[in-house]
Amino acid sequence: MASVTDPEPPRESFRLSMLLNDTRYRGYTFQFIALLLLILFMAYLGWNLVRNLVDQGQDISFEFMGQPASYDINQRLIPYDSQDTHLRAAFVGVLNTLLVAFLGCVTATVLGVLAGVLRLSKNWLVAKLMAFYVEIFRNVPVLIWILIIFFVMTAALPAPSAFRGDDPDSSMLFGAFAFTNRGVYVPRPIWEAGSAIVVAVFLASLVAVFAYRRYATKLLYDTGRLLPMGWPSLAILIVPTLLAFFALGQPISLEYPELRGFNFQDGIQVRGSLIALWFALAIYTGAFIAENVRAGIMSVSHGQTEAAAALGLRPRRIMSLVILPQALRVVIPPVISQYLNLTKNSSLAIAVGYMDVTGTLGGITLNQTGRAIESVMLLMLFYLVISLTISAVMNLYNNAVKLKER
Image 1 (tube, rainbow, N blue to C red):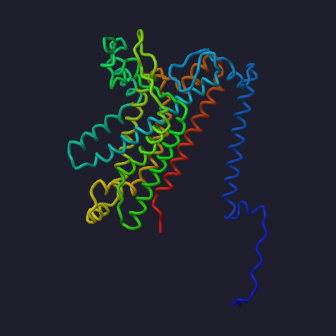
Image 2 (image 1 turned 120 degrees about the vertical axis):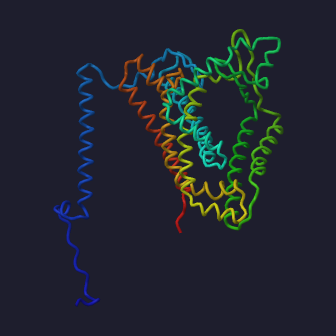
Image 3 (image 1 turned 45 degrees about the vertical axis):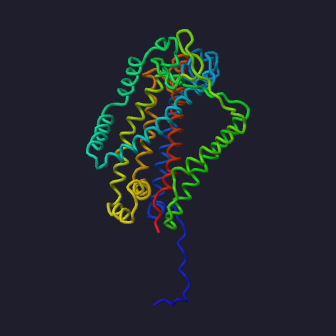
């Protein structure tokens, strides 16, 4: 029997044969070989592509991005005209894609959470209506919904000339919003000196609202003391901003749309193509998110609800403080996939004439310059970057809200 004082046996020196015979290294060896083969395969594809392009007298160049685009874009967030470069046209398309993706994700989340919660309502009519919404919208292709909403807006809404009369504002909503078959006209904010301070105060108030709600939730979990959430959050958000707004002499004003000639002038025109794409993507994706929310809620033990009710919590508090925080660990992962699908489905915008990055860079620019490989590569790179960004942000949020094991 060996003594406890005996020296440790010498470790076996590393040999190349251990890469295959030793289980400690064999897995790494196979992974390295697979990675090397993949790199060689991709390099061969790239070399073959370059060789074929050279044989046809072509090369891969992105100089075309600096040439004049020579086409207009109807919906844009930044100044642009037809004499700007293809690069700026592509950037306008990128902003349009990000706009509809952001609006769609926010609206789909609100609709999905509401529909998912109401599907479990004890009210038979409400539950069946939400089930009807989910089954109808998620079982019909999103492109059909985009076309339906666009055609309904075009056919049902009046032309701008219908607002002509002795008092055109009487036909406008609150005298500021005009819904026409050419789009929706809304007031445009005019930023004057001091407006940046008002915006900064609003953003700081928004951060303060989240901080207060986080503190109130922590206090509830630690001590059981329940602070009001609604009116303090509203006061923190509105009061400082209003004080800054009036103290600085109302530096933000509105420019209202006015009917001049055959169309509305001034204000902001939100085209029907954007609205149709936004609503269709939001309603379609919201139906899938509703099922994710319903599954997450049903994954929470019914005993949690009974225990919370026994403590005297109201149903709304039970849902917001007990059920939903536990359901998020089930809800968020599939919701990430729905956000990614919504962003990629926005490429269907060309069907209704909304100029997103697929319509600019992957459409008109590609056809004008003939640079299909470069345009498609840039298009793939954009969708890859935006998808990875959405996934990374949502995974950070998922890690923040998941249950912490003791």
